[in-house]
Image (cartoon, rainbow over all chains, first blue to last red; front, side, top):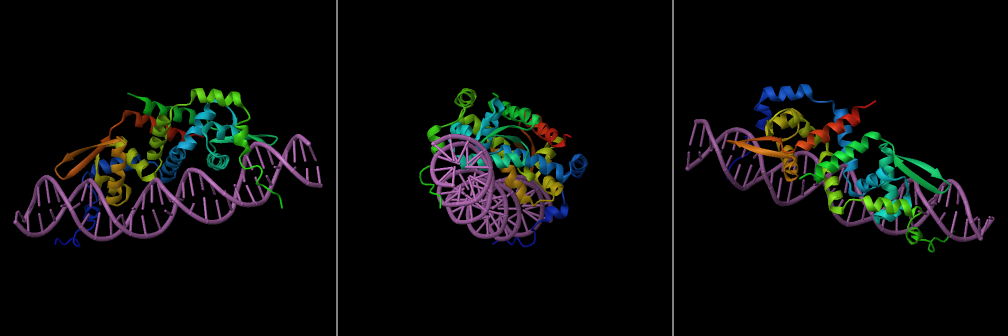
Length: 123
Length: 123
DNA sequence: TTTATATATGCATATATGCTCATGCAAGAA
DNA sequence: TTCTTGCATGAGCATATATGCATATATAAA
């Protein structure tokens, strides 16, 4: 049996192999706040239901039951996800009587989403 | 007490309020396969550790322990995440002896990532 | 008023996810 | 050969997440 107790995380003792490169990257690295926001933005777009909602709202202003009908997903599920998108300020809501109409609330989402589509549909 | 048993999902019976809009969106809607790929791509980018890895590799070719050192995250965690990125063909690996060097394996990721950064750092 | 409808939301739950720990494995050093 | 090193990976755990159910809320109709 090989004893492993000696090594553990010596790589953290050595730190890294290419110190120059690591230092260079460290200089360019954004703050944790910025990186967290970037990750959060991608994460919100990283769910099939929300992806479809965004795509739909890219085309038309729709109410909750429209979206539910379009995607074949329960009103509850859509409502829950719309809240997530609202909290991220990606969609906004307009009330017309009992009906809640949703639209995109972020110009950048278009280009971001289309960039994602382009990535997937490339050769 | 109000009885709710009568209604349930009548909204699915009615289907939707704006049939025209829904039909229009349906025409434009991509296939589930495409939408799933889009969502998966965003999901992979939607984790802080992976976001940082991508950013780092945008700047330099790095080995596993470089990345671990740079981000202050264990070698194991980095390795696990690199596998995720490998499985999505977002990074590729070059072996130099015991050392595994990683680079980005997808030109589109640059623009996608920078679009995300732009989204976050806007006013 | 009472009833119906469109949406929102708290709770429970099943599944997914990210990390640590331990260890496997391959390449080089001793 | 044996030991060390850099990386990969499976198991287990703790947290996160997406959805269904039941119900609350608000608006409108009857």
